Image (tube, rainbow, N blue to C red; front, side, top):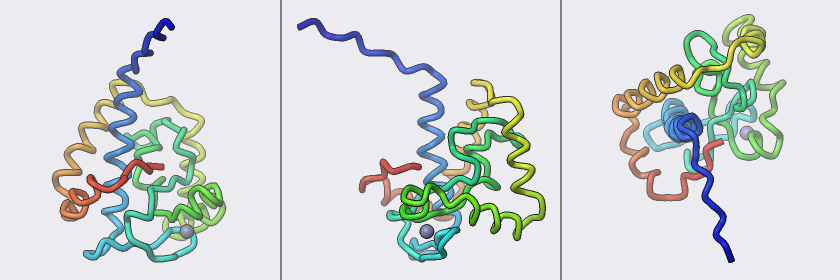
Length: 157
Ligand SMILES: [Zn+2]
């Protein structure tokens, strides 16, 4: 049987995959306490970071630029969520939006407006990757990130 030629991953999709990994780690570390616990943004359940993920207000498929960052990797558009809310409830976008609005008036609207804008270029994504790599080395929660590397950290929604 003839082997199918492996489709080569584009540079862009490789960059996105690297950013996804770093971003999920960064967001979870950002909101965690020293024990590695954080609160789900939408249901407020506390859990260990290994059972939480990075949830997006505007879906993570959105790579449009918002204040110098693709929405998918923007702090204003990302919070910690439990899998129940993120996967089971599809992100509970209305609750997410309500809380964002409470934090900063008009923020959900600004994010939705950004979706109409231009998608990040590969160069912009490269710049983001570089920024995220720097974040990883400066975050004080590095210790648990190291730990997480070992156990199934593939869930990076
Ligand atoms: Zn939740």
